[in-house]
Image 1 (cartoon, rainbow, N blue to C red):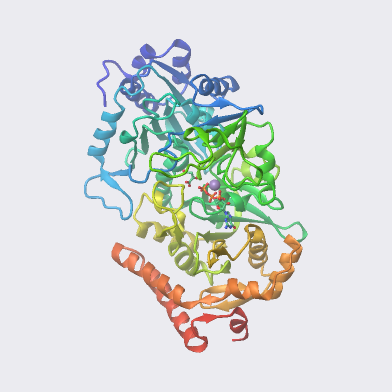
Image 2 (image 1 turned 90 degrees about the vertical axis):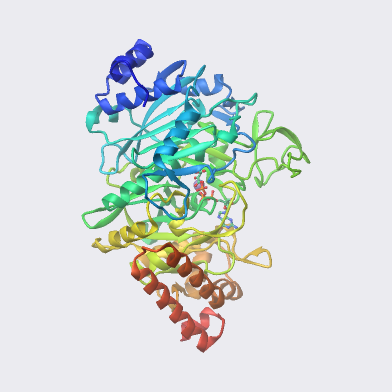
Length: 628
Ligand SMILES: Nc1nc2c(ncn2[C@@H]2O[C@H](COP(=O)(O)OP(=O)(O)OP(=O)(O)O)[C@@H](O)[C@H]2O)c(=O)[nH]1
Ligand SMILES: O=C([O-])CC(=O)C(=O)O
Ligand SMILES: [Mn+2]
């Protein structure tokens, strides 16, 4: 901490303009004042702007993003484009570290001694805002004034980051005022650092994202990409997982959506898939309703699991969004609502991206600067029109399929089903249901694997262990995390059903499913939650019967569903399933301190598979299993 010659409020009064100081003073929270004074003294901004919940303050931030050149206007009113540095296009796992007290060990993620990490990040951030304006913004995670609410304060010198947060989170200044000294808030300090001509972070060698688990604060420097900088998103997620495990609830990397069942029945599902594995595309199905697409909190309220969306906006992947597969997002992206496009191709004021299903200009400007088809980067790789991880940022209220009531409900919605899924080319069937809570949590959630994607820096397409899709964010020991999960379900009077999906089965380089097939799996799961259809029992859970899928394909997609497709997709792949169990068991054995029943569940599943193999061989048709 910097030595301040006076008390925090006196210091702030000296540093801030009258108007800005009054806004800070109006929040009665000495801890907040201390934090602000400390960091303002350290960062040395030339100017400070404090955002209240007023439309004028939000407008000021948006204006500054344009004025500073971090965003540029596009042809459609409300649309802007933002670029990140060519080498700053995804989450930087290598430079993201959990700062832990001496002696604390967490498997899988980079950890660092807290004292040392704080010293390093302080050194990097000393005076980093000289000549810049600091924006102080207040938000809340989850609905306001509810058992789910978590207040958070964001300090940033990037108007783009602040603007993104105004699209993604509920404003929290008044909530801070209401809570006063009782606000138990999260803290985020970000600086994009020195910028180049294109207004992108220049000193990537000093890019750091350090998460202080003790003080519930995250420091992020010399980066702009949203996944590294938007405090309330994946940075806060590390902190809320820790809180959830301590307090006995769930903070998860999940979409939240409503599946519309027969006769107007509404059933809510959460879905945990790793980054770039289909959360947004699933939650956006036109005939269902979205509540959230990335982060949920789930609490036990009167014995029922109830979920809220942590956010109110979408930071979504734009690649591949086309009129046919994603009609709703397509429509929103072409309407005059507030949208930030990031790392896409711009030509004559219009945005273009890979796989949009219409002709793309041969030149323009993109994440590499001036672009033409065939342009190569310094590594000799051809640069596509837009980056694979290019995104759009928009409020959920822009979507006609939003379930507004569910989004705003202070006690959330009842969770009927929880889905786990990832990019699995060859092992899991498209959809199946767990035998019970424990079976689902262990063999579907804790055993999840998924191929790596462009959402993180590094090699793509590598099969990786990713329990509950949260490995990148796991700020507690996996054993404690799983114990909390199992316990959470046991305490419920009514447990959600657990399912696993796999949209990414491949054979000879071809997908076995079309992108919209997921719509059928969802309808089937909805029916199962209410016991409306039978299913086939297999060693790995219940799978759909062919005739039910035929009917649903017809009703939902107006398509035939050939027998051969069903057999190919749902065949039990015993060698792959067994190999997977071995991989997972080994990982957990090496980690240690995991609940014993994890091994019991995996062993039991292995034995069921071995028995089935004796009877039917390595690959078993679902029709054989149905008869058995
Ligand atoms: N082959 C195939 N690709 C799909 C399917 N569903 C989604 N995708 C692709 O997967 C990619 C990521 O999908 P999203 O829905 O944006 O992923 P997400 O889980 O929201 O990702 P984050 O926002 O990073 O957390 C997109 O390129 C989609 O086109 C599917 O059913 N089949
Ligand atoms: O955090 C990000 O970079 C964006 C995102 O949703 C994810 O990667 O899960
Ligand atoms: Mn998404």
